[in-house]
Length: 166
Image (spheres, rainbow, N blue to C red):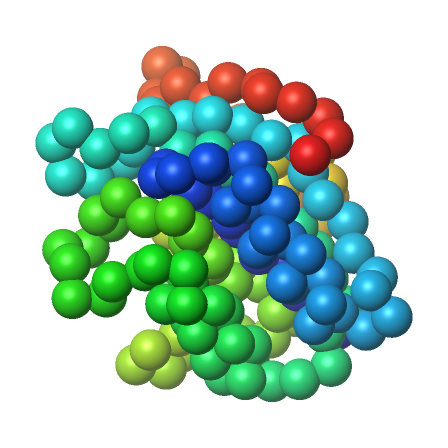
């Protein structure tokens, strides 16, 4: 099952945080099969005032478990790396891992919605995802990643290329 994940970090060594999270997720992948997008920097969106800028990217892995199983693993990883879920939503964090899509599945559960509910509104997710899977159709709206990116309002949040390989 092809699973798309968004990675973000705005505390500590952002690059190292993303590299370690990527390596963790690749370790969950079937035969370590994965693709990754370039690294981007973006201003915080819907975060507390004064939050530092994020490094963002996306990866796609081949995963054989369930969506809930993957969620448990990613949340445990986040907590082990400093994520404090008692803080306000979108507080600065060393690592944030979001499940964007899980094959063609749609999940609507209390603690998990797939495709990610804000995927189509976030340039910092769509831009890296478009470099990796531009023609992927996002379940629920029937549009490709490329189409969703083009439909974002001009002058939205700034997303800056950092590097190809990370």
